[in-house]
Amino acid sequence: MPSEPRRISLLQGDITKIQVDAIVNAANSSLLGGGGVDGAIHRAAGPELVHACRLLGGCKTGQAKLTPGFRLPAPWIIHTVGPVYRDGMQGEAQQLAACYRACLSIAAERNFQSLAFPAISCGIYGYPILEACSIAIREISQFLATNASPATVVLVAFDSQVHQAFSQILQDLD
Ligand code: AR6
Image 1 (tube, rainbow, N blue to C red):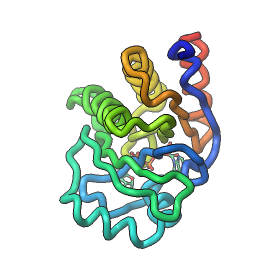
Image 2 (cartoon, rainbow, N blue to C red; image 1 turned 90 degrees about the vertical axis):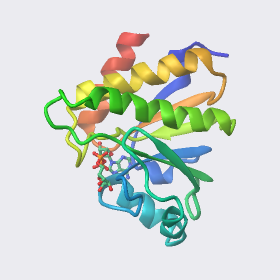
Image 3 (cartoon, rainbow, N blue to C red; image 1 turned 60 degrees about the horizontal axis):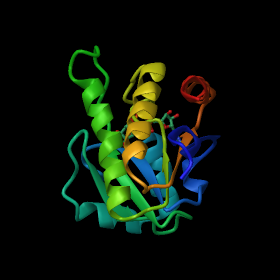
């Protein structure tokens, strides 16, 4: 098994196009769709997704739930709800860390080999990007250090600011 930093890779692009065992959705607590990556995932997965999500009864901030990927290349979607960033004093960092751990735990339970994350809370929810990306990489590396599954994690940056932040933090890790 390669060391943890080698199990994390970075891509710039659209998470709905990626062929991995599961992609993570940065959803809201209704799980019924929205803008940003959530909107893109619902459009690409097709209308079956919202039907499956309706049966889940929503999701609390920091938790995660699983659905099939329907028309996506990825067979599974792990939906998580990141914190809305207010002033950093409302437990946002703990909630964001909990999102990454909850998604990774589902992937490990299901024995998923590959998992792709967007930058949770870094869009509409307004989390400062460098801080959020460093929480993401810290939680993912800690989890991989003690779990064989998922074997690989792909960080998917849609915009260059997120790409820059992830790549800087990954370099420091190496
Ligand atoms: N692939 C990968 N990343 C993407 C994509 C994509 N197709 N589209 C956007 N991003 P956001 P949040 C990036 O706003 O901040 C929704 O309405 C985006 O550039 O999608 O957690 C939900 O329903 C940013 O870096 O999620 C919630 O109401 C990152 O994904 C709310 O937004 C996250 O941005 C959640 O807000």
